[in-house]
Amino acid sequence: MFPASRYSCQAHRCIRALKTVPTEHTAPQLYTTLHRRTCSSLSTPRITTHYTIHPRDKDPRWEGVEMERFADEADVVIVGGGPAGLSAAIRLKQLANEHEKELRVCLVEKASQIGAHTLSGACLEPSAINELFPDWKERGAPLHTPVTEDVFSILTEKHRIPVPMLPGLPMQNHGNYIVRLGNFVRWLGEQAEELGVELYPGYAAAEVLFHEDGSVKGIATNDVGIAKDGSPKDVFERGMELHAKVTMFGEGCHGHLAKQLYKKFNLRENCEPQTYAIGLKEVWMIDEKKWRPGRVEHSVGWPLNRHTYGGSFLYHLNEGEPLVALGFVSLPKLTFPGGLLIGCSPGFMNVPKIKGTHTAMKSGMLAAEAIFPKVTAESLDSETAGLHVPEYAEALKNSWVWKELYAVRNIRPSFHNYFGLYGGMVYTGIFYWILRGKEPWTLKHCGLDANQLKPAKDCTPIDYPKPDGKISFDLLSSVALSGTNHEGDQPAHLTLKDDSVPVARNLAIYDGPEQRFCPAGVYEYVPLETGDGMRLQINAQNCVHCKTCDIKDPSQNINWVVPEGGGGPAYNGM
Picture 1: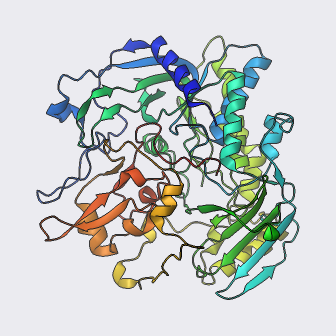
Picture 2: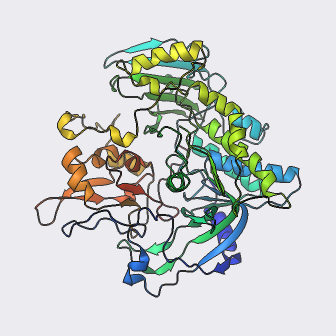
Picture 3: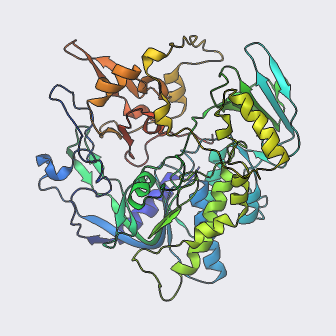
């Protein structure tokens, strides 16, 4: 792991070197569309205390509080220390060294350590790392388990039906590696630091900053020292501003800053709504007699019905002990003045392959190559203060990433048919395996995930078996294993646009789906103290940052924002 003190010292040196700039706004400008509750009731208990919902300039408790922020300048600022962000940072510094150019690249990451929030299967296709570091083996990249065997099955409640893995199908993993992605991301961070990238783990990007002409100016990190009730503590400190010629957003799935950029620049105007799947993963130590290092197993079917898209994976790692990893498993406009989107934030995952690391890395590399000549030019030829780099989108369309994703574009939406899973498998066999995705049409999704929920009166409750403590475990015990922790005395970062909606609509119509779709027990409906109704309780300390609530809430009333930097899960190499 990265030594935490090493990075905190670097961050403090940076902060001491910053200049103080007056800020005209006392409340962040990012959430201008969210800062009013649409309706309220005097009888509704206040749940949300976050300043993005209740502006501080209207709160008398904030009168006289110093709201100036430090600011610093960089050539490029990158939000997110995952595979995409780190690959972009590395490629920028590689180009700068090749051309003997000075280039300051700063990367902020909300996790306390690089890789701490990274969770994936993961079976890594090495195409991008081969390009980024052809000598990755000599550099000690933690790719220890080449795939030796592929198994695919359809499960019923009592049987497993083997399906032959034909050459050329997207699930074939010959040449790939089973990895612990958190370890791989941590290694990428080490390579980035060696090249001179400034890494700032524990600093959450909370706000997008804009020039007067509307182009992106940079980001501001989150304020710290705010009490749970939204009031300033004695130790309150404003976040810092990082300004850049170009800001790259690689926040991962459903990035909370990317959501604001989609609206401001209308980036999703000409694309389908993004759809998501929640992934659950466990790492087990098993009987060595059952251990098959390099074996990759995937399955579909039970316990899911044919209309539920999903399946399971089981990967046999070879890392010195018999470990297995097991679990369940539409591009917007990518550029705008002053910034661009990379990685899983816009959505570069190859769904049938169940892989997105290699495409995320390549998107970051292509973005770096498009940005570099502009940010290092002696004279900036730009119509806006923040540089616009449309060349990135063109480079992406001419790359193997676009070719790969275009070929599989219809596989996920093909499952929207009467036969569900099995109809989709037939479609994949005909139009991908035989025609390689060259069909002259593009299928559509069924709309937003949030719109797919049915009212409770139309559904039959599922009676799940109780955890046995041997192969199944209770939810909170599993959350504890994730190492998740947040500062308790801070406003909940799961914000509600209207505190009355959960009970009045979600509980009344959908029987409170928050308490079921959250995998970490964050949401609970509990009786009012008066005994005459229910209220929503948010256990924000349990949040594992999956953002399922923001995606799946049928009222779209939940807005996930970043908590204080350093909070969240600590997956330790998952």
